[in-house]
Image (cartoon, rainbow, N blue to C red; front, side, top):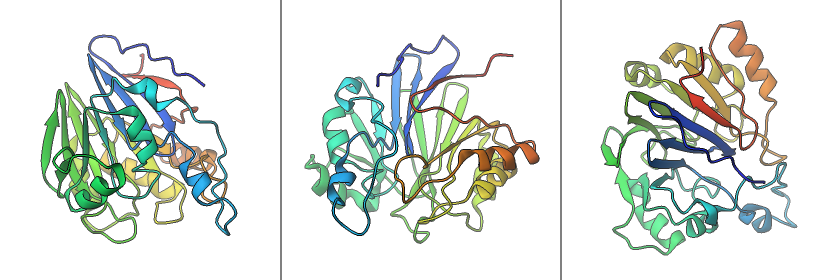
Length: 254
């Protein structure tokens, strides 16, 4: 597969779904990549075990073709959110991570210990036009090892939740952020919210659009996005289900 990497028109931004929780964003001349997993490292790791990671869809792009990326993120240390093969081939100029994961990240990637930009919940950092606010996530537990990122650039705000369940105070943290697009998992297992929960979270935080993710990667851990569509439609939460590699330009045309 190959991506249509046409840059976003001036005054807008473009977003592509790369599979699982991976998204690529272009704004003006800058590029951001959330949690890319563009390899078969997990499929190989768990082959011939009782937990095979059978890939459902093809790899959407060779990460070596994305070496123009200015900044990538890892929300936590699980391989589908911190993949050495993907990041090693992509070679992003900067990597934003949870600060408490620094030693793990450095060991896995074999990178300079000072290279990643580490954040604790509530802290911010900037790379080019992208300003990152770290917000808590609750994947296994609500601990600093798991983050989401609210990213501001130009007049826009995107929230990438990472892998998370709902937790007390989540809405109060996110609602004031003025989120244009929320990127939320819907698989409803392995420490993630369900389709119903993702739709209602989008509604409660006032997201102008919710894009579901974390499905159609591995057979043992997926969901039907139409369940999310039904829930979001029933509560009138604007939403969009992207095809793998599909390009969306925001704001949407009138």
